[in-house]
Image 1 (cartoon, one colour):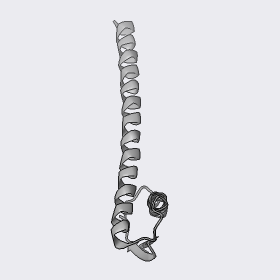
Image 2 (cartoon, one colour):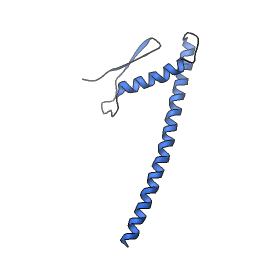
Image 3 (cartoon, helix red, strand yellow):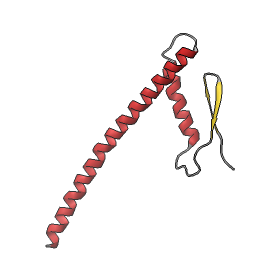
Image 4 (cartoon, one colour):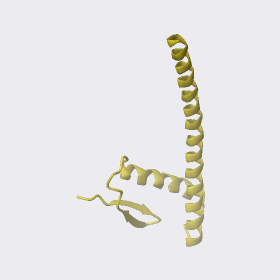
Length: 98
């Protein structure tokens, strides 16, 4: 049975159907997105107007994008470190084989 995931935003329920070949939990992803939106919404003191909804979603998207960018940079450095270590080990192995 295909799973339909629901997420409530601004008092409205939205549904989506995740990819069949998913390697992630779509319910957790939806909850994570909702956390970003709730955090952004908490910065607005007034009731949520249609205009504020767009600003809230934009702020949440920017925060999510920043966190994603930070993780990519972090793991890029990690990947580079691993590549350097592997290269060093290969050089040592090649020297001992000669």
